Length: 287
Image (cartoon, rainbow, N blue to C red; front, top):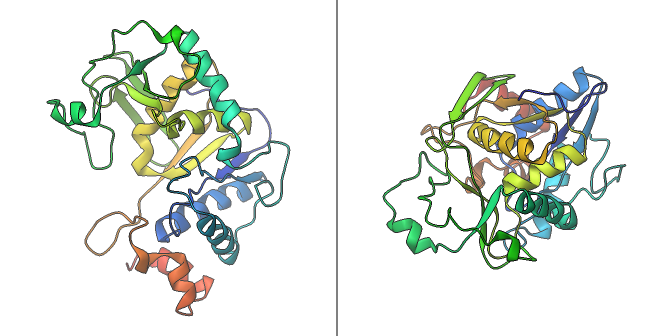
């Protein structure tokens, strides 16, 4: 399953989500992504992952562009400069996701799920790790009415994973990886009942459309890669290489998150730090 998306020029991407200010963890990941694109004499794409309009805010879009430029990052395609794969904001790419949803529905890969949060909370299965989607107990898995839905909204749509199959890939940073479907992760959501395409589906569709050859992101998304490889198989599309960076952690050992306002790039700018000092902070790992 480790096919390469495109032969020839390297195409990497920065994919921030404007739900808060970017922090040191984002900075290091994006700097590594930019460095790998530069070393390969390739193209770097910036994609605004603003799918969830209830959480994404325009001020955060402006801030992420400003902060990334302030750090010295440059990209050749993006929402601010255009390019052959436009549009580069996910909120403007719904037609691509709906087409993929129809292909998955028609192929029998997904099914509608009407389980409530309360139903899932009462299930015996617990999440595998922090921030991970819990293994779905399968209450709606036998449904066979997917073809009656003309639109995805109104229910959750889940991908039916091949229970017991090992999803294997070799990561450029973390090495060989293997996750067992049905044990390490279960049937996952590809479209939410509030009519929002899920992250797993959107990034697969966009990485293919934008001809991304390598995905650089945090190691907390290793298991998401297994899910995305299954989606790529179902959609019969090629997959990029993967490079999952080590996570930046705070003094307590917790990984950086957008709730850490004191570690945001914007905060360091406001207190007078230079880009060079931020880069030194990342190199020394003193936080």
